[in-house]
Each structure stands twice: as C-alpha cells, then as structure tokens.
Image (cartoon, rainbow, N blue to C red; front, side, top):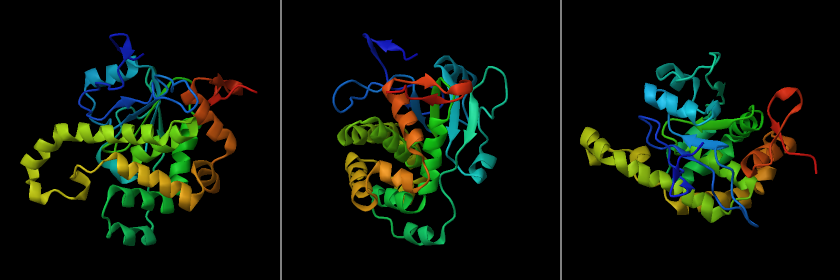
Amino acid sequence: MPAAQAGVPSRDLDWEPCWNVRDLGGLPLTGGGETRWGALIRADCLGKLTAAGRQALIDYGVATIIDLRSADELAIDPPAFPGGRAGEPAFRHAPLVTNDPAANARWMALQTRADVYRIFLDFYGRGLAGALRAIAGAPPGGIVFHCLGGTDRTGLVAALALRLAGVPDEVIAADYEMTLARRRSIYAQLVAEKGEANLGFWDKLNMTADNMLATLAYLDEQHGGERAYLRANGLADEDMERVRARLRGNVAPLPGGEGTRAPSP
C-alpha cells in the first residue's frame, strides 16, 4: 500500500535505482471521486532494480509487470522479474512500437514531444491497444507498466488509461509533466557525461504539459477520441470498461479467477 505522509499517500515511489515511478492513484475524476491507489503504477525501466528496489515493488502489492519495450531492448536489459517464479509478479511483454517505414520517415522531422505522440497515435495504435488489453486482462493486484525512461510510451499508455477512467485532460497533462521534474534530477549527470551541446532530442527537458494537451486534442480531432481510437485498433469495449473499473475502484474478479471486470449494472 502507499506510504502515508501526513495522512495523504505519496504518489512518488522509491524503487531503487528507478527515478520516475509513481502511483496513478489519487487523481480527481470528472464528476467527483479519485482514481484508486495501488491499481496502476507507471515507471521507468525496472531491469536494474536493486534487492531493496525489488522488495519495495513486491511490498507495494504489485501482481503484474507490463513491459512496453521491444524484444531488442529486453535482450540488452532483461526484465527484473521475468515471470514464473513463486512470490514474484507475473510478467507481460506488450511491445508498443513496430518497424513501420512510413513512421520512420516522420521520426526525422520531430520538433516537439507532441510530434512524437502524433506518430505513436498514427502508426502504433495496435501496440497501444495491446498495452491496454494487457492491463484489462491482468489478475487482481497492482499493475506496473514501463518502457525505458517512463516518458513517452509509458506516458501515452497512462494518458489513454486515465482518459478511459474519466480523469480531466489538465490533470493527465500535469501528471505527465511530473516526469520533467524527475528528469531534472538526472539532467546534470547527462550533461556531465555527454556535454549539453551533444544531448539529443530524447534527453532534452521538454516533457511539458502543453505537449500532452496537444496530443489529447489531436486524439480527439483526428481519431475521434480514446474509445473510437482504441476500438479501431482492436480493443474491445469490455476491455475498456475493465481498465476504467480498475482505476475507479469498482473491480470484481472475472469468471475462473482471471483478470478483472466491472460489476454488472
């Protein structure tokens, strides 16, 4: 469970040596209430967790880890919990990005972080729907989803899940921008290692709320909103409701004890 600070749980989680881990609980919902604590946790790569970090993750009640990285990335930096060992979280591989020549051409013209997410939305919808499907089908317990830095792939999956739950856009964008503050903590190290002039697009401190707001507007204007978008990319309405229910707290076991479902109306 989250550690209380003056009666209020902290969204920031200390899983050594990760720098960008936070619970998506406690966020306000349109119409009242808040997202459920301990249901979804977003993170940067877990591959180098120390023994203390591994134990902190387990103690937090995590039952499933969803890794959004590619197979090549996993080969370089294997998962901390590959799955199949008693007492450890289940592992689900849900790679988000595929090799698409048309997308590759657009990568060369990036100007803002919102440009990155437009490419994701336009070309990697199946991967995004697959990540949400993995969340919907996970067994009871906390879910961690992560990529490498917990910024782009993780940020977009978080935004779609929070949209389904009914979190207002400005709150989604503010949560996304929290990564900027986390990034500042390691920026000096990056500058020392590479020199500021040599830092590439992915190292820049440009994870601002306006980029996420522009992304959500693009989702609505070009793809008809999150539900139409996910439906067009193969995610069933029932799975969308499972994601929504998990974050809103009204979660019941699926028949056979697998996954979760929203209670019947």
